[in-house]
Length: 379
Image (tube, rainbow, N blue to C red; front, side, top):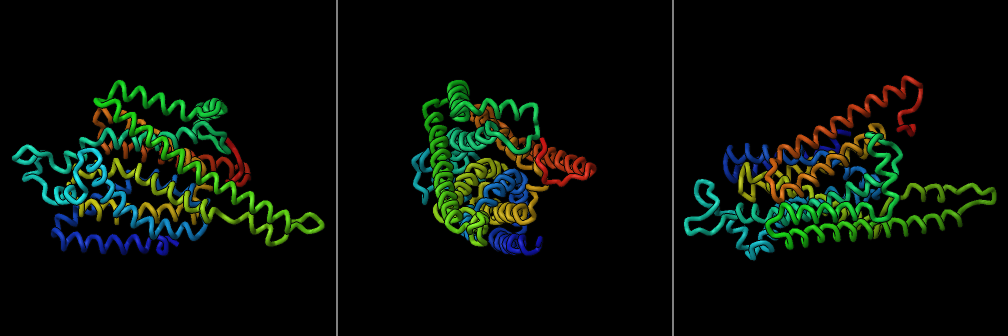
């Protein structure tokens, strides 16, 4: 199974490194490989969250995530999105922004001799907008999970009280907006722009997540009606009726879950793209390393987690991933006014995932010692 799932990742990696060599010799190969490792290390929590969503999608949309999704990840999120950000932030057309990226100042300077800023400088200057949008989107994802009742709890002393607090309607929106207001007024140089970007991130989350949930619920209602019609006289569901329970999100529901995953990927990719400029400002190498190599491995890892049932066996992994996302969201918001290294973000994510994995192993050992199944619901 490992070879089958990761085969295309290995092939894409090999091809990308060959292209990097042709493009810029061995130095480009090394930079491309480093960027790929950076993306995977920063996005492991992304893979876990993706897996929780992918489990709800039909096989068709899972394939779309691995095919069309990777194209969007490479050319949309890692190449086109930074150009669009520069366009909206500095008013520089995408074509000119790309030309600027391909011809940086000598010796990696932030400005050209005539005083005009480099592509890297323009993108870095747009960081408050990026951080506010991505931070709010990820924060809403984390808070909605944090304030809901859960089958399992990891940090029980904290998760259970917060789940009870979540019974208050719109608690997640209230907390997110309050944090955005505090950050924009205390850390942002341009409070109005940060507020707008943050609210846009909030609106995008509510729209995409809401539409996905709406169509998924609509499909479930249709399935329930079909099952009721196919029930026999002994009130036992027919074979067709039982199969409908196994049907995953398809059609419009699958599309919006797919769209949700792509927006989520964009929010996660922001820190990777910005962090990549500490290694190279070449957009081609960034697209090859972060996009083709990194994003492909993250997608393969996502599918691997789904096919192996890893999240069902190691139940706290999802918790660790959400706490890592919460930490990333807060770091993005704080970084609007205070520089925080992307390596700190990556280490925090690894720490949360690692701690959750260890806790899951310990839980499984306790259950097996009692003769209980690992999938049994326990706190």
